[in-house]
Image (cartoon, rainbow, N blue to C red; front, side):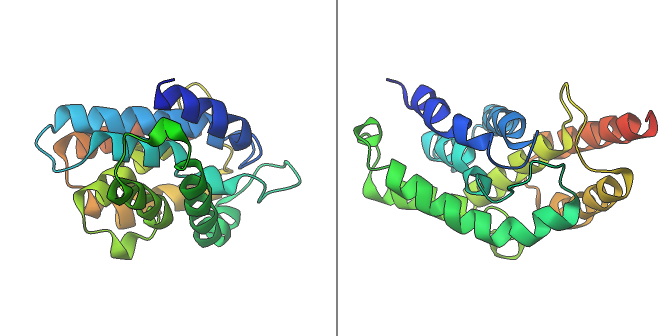
Length: 194
């Protein structure tokens, strides 16, 4: 079984237990953006398999943190960020013991666990793989896809400003920066229409 199929079968059902109406839609977008960033920037010193696996698991730690099923606002998400990274890192560390991942070295497995455990700690992201995961996560967060994000207008405005002020300055790829601007405008228009 290809590892992506295994990851989808294992992680996606649990994502439904994460942020209501968000994590199961957000994660495939993040995976797609990570792949696009790598495709547009092939000279990055990043292991594609390591990054893709970490991307699938990056928000797995939100599963079960929000019990009532009601839409979350930005303060709810901010308060759970540290905890979800710790839980997600523990979950992927256990999953990497499956023989589907025998093609990875122990160092690659440790790197995946590390990436999941730090992906929202903006102040410590310095390595290309850490930053690319953050770029992909940001783009996947801005991209409303076919569904409107669940934030109310005030939370959305704060989220977007935080993305522009805190995340965009860390981007290292031209593709990521260009996509950020396109998605930012698209999301602004979506909220302006409602």
